Length: 334
Image (tube, rainbow, N blue to C red; front, side, top):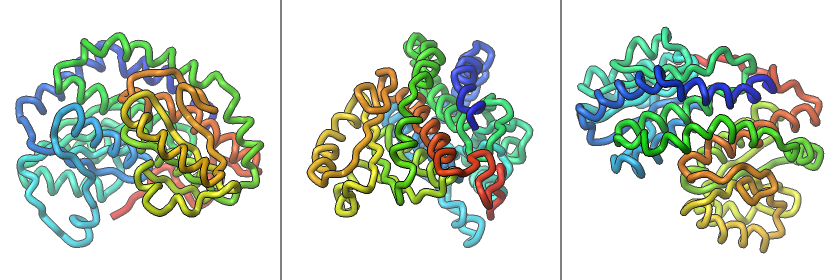
């Protein structure tokens, strides 16, 4: 897991190579020409959080309604929704889950434009879709996904900006990502927090907007590697009830970036402090600092120290983060 985490700057650089950008641009051109009216994502586990990030990009940057499909509607209940005007995107590290493949199959039969975003370009999912993008993360050693997650995030960002025709405007900021990711991985705050929270009974993660998928992914990593119950909430939802459970012995990891989502978290932080909650802020001015970037790019950086924290906490608790009990690298569901 440590090796996978450390490789993420290299993965970013690889995805930003001209040949890979050209491939993504070709996919984007097909999508732009088809002009879908809405976007439907389908994914599981870690990739579900990348897909959630994709919904924010689609709605904010493309102005298209977007959401996450319920695979069981098609696999268990045999529903056949009309997706003829949709772009349906399957996001999967392995591309091997039968239910995601079934969603793309049903979508394509209904006339949808289908796209697979995967780390396995030869997978069943990629072969089923009309279009595919290889996130080029390379072999991932650990069961808990790290570099494949952030590669999916970057691939979706590049795709959306290419559809908008604004990729060249973003190139300077994008080209800085590998170096910024390396900088985000340099700190040792995650190790200190692991010692502090070694005996925690549960945790809460929270963020708004583009940061919300990061909060959900951080919670999953904590559960996978440390077997620590971790609940993820958007900052807004946290105030609608779950705030009542926060108290000094419940650590809260709050992701606070620069932008509308980060500014909206100020009230959340204030309310948490009123509850005397143990709050750790992840962000440019946080306890786990990351470089300041546009809020759209922040999920590619803010998750990095949280991955390190999940790894360090698992080790501090005497667990093996490379072999979580009961888990396999590829989970096949229907």
